[in-house]
Length: 138
Image (cartoon, rainbow, N blue to C red; front, side, top):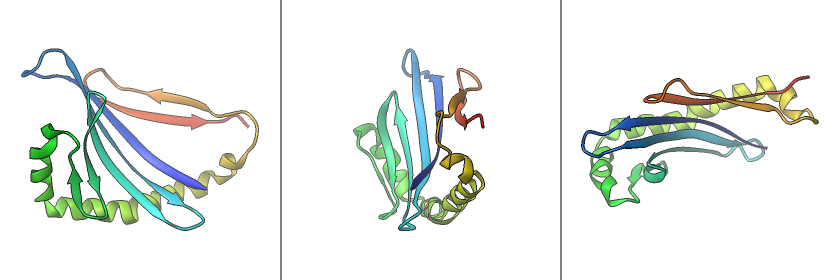
């Protein structure tokens, strides 16, 4: 079983330097393979629906697929304390929480039958934490 815990932060904002509404996204989480005990973490940002910058946890460096992200990459690559914190978070804390959630909900995850209902909640237009909740009737 491969389990994934992720949180997606989506912010729509008006930029004073550009016209219109733009979307900034942050996605991070971890995956845990119960059989191999392998843990993989990820943290990546998007802008207007395209990849902007992502953390390579093995190398401890940021990957900038867009030229506009290179300045941010250089700055964040030099923030070693934050990168070490994130590496530690994805190696220990994130999988610990994922395993706790998995173990507390194992019986409902293993049930057969009707698919769970999925509800996504958003707080407001300009700053919203997209939180998806899944539930299933017994």
